[in-house]
Length: 112
Length: 117
Image 1: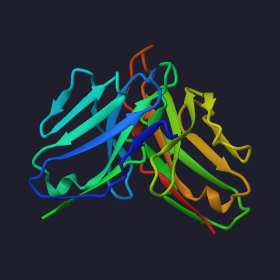
Image 2 (image 1 turned 90 degrees about the horizontal axis):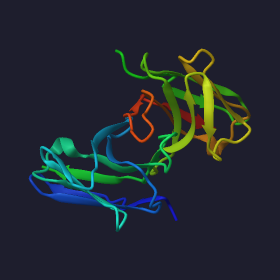
Image 3 (image 1 turned 180 degrees about the vertical axis):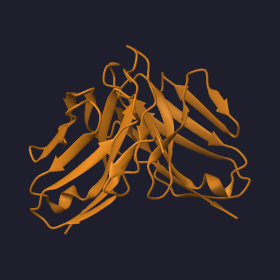
Image 4 (image 1 turned 90 degrees about the vertical axis):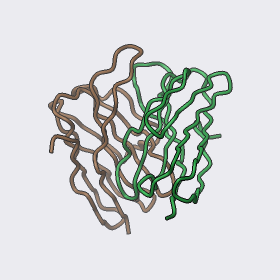
């Protein structure tokens, strides 16, 4: 079983739609949680950190449920420019390394 | 550009050849990480350095792989006797030294895409 599991998609949605991505992680000792965005043939870039209290950045809302080991990302009012792969990421247990453990990514295609 | 840079961006080689990639991190960053990404997968951790010390290596890093960061600045990743299964994007990332339980963002370079024929 992979440490971080995501639905690979693709999610094809019209502009303006609301789309939600889910992710589960297997290690209950995982320390920190993130969503990264990766455009086609580009490097991953940090989209947002994820906190238990939930956090919002404009049209993006992220949520963490430690009890269920579940992470979500909600995108409201989708734009064409949101088309990308969204990677769910956790850091390894034990803070010293801070290596990132990535899911396989979920591909989002926003259609005009 | 003060971001992470990698060279070359693309490398095509024949099976059995040796290849070397270079990563130049953001200048004040103590930590340097190497990841590998194959098609349809997320990046996978290979190894990391804190200054010049290599502190952890993944089981993915076979004996044919070696990484160095001799002066705590740039790093090289060498693959000896390349195999077709080595074809992937090799990503370098750098960060400031994290606190004991704090995370510092890792900034990724553009990657080196390796194709082994």
